Length: 210
Image (cartoon, rainbow, N blue to C red; front, side, top):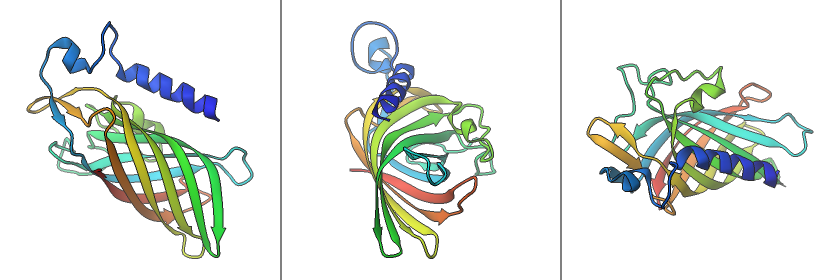
């Protein structure tokens, strides 16, 4: 599993890292100016899929779109949903630990979150891959804790995220860079399990820097 995530991280970072010598961002190397949004304020709408019980090691992915991006336009049209969302996300994670506490399950996951800028929105929750067909503009490693109620099917999550790569993209007011390498942000989700699915569950939430 560690090798699989290392390969995934390497391939994602390769997409985000422009070719050529030298360090720094795409905007820095090209000499172009980019407005950097360092303080993140994001809102998420998504679904997730877990591997079936008994699969070892267990896998997890969550995906969807951003319904709010502080400082930027989140939708391309009046209908504010996955079909017009300019920013989407996709995350893959491993599940190293599950702790039972009465009706609660405390689940630990670690993985990689990628946020995409999609100039031709076409999100479709029946097609999870549609949420990662844009240009990757931010990649973050995360550690997630899920607290799931097995009686009601409700859950909450907390994520610690650290940005490992960013890439500039064009917006209405010029080039923009979302986040800063090495910076951290926190993500909070709440939702409901719909196992066996698909999907395994649905959620909404938000993220803030810090």
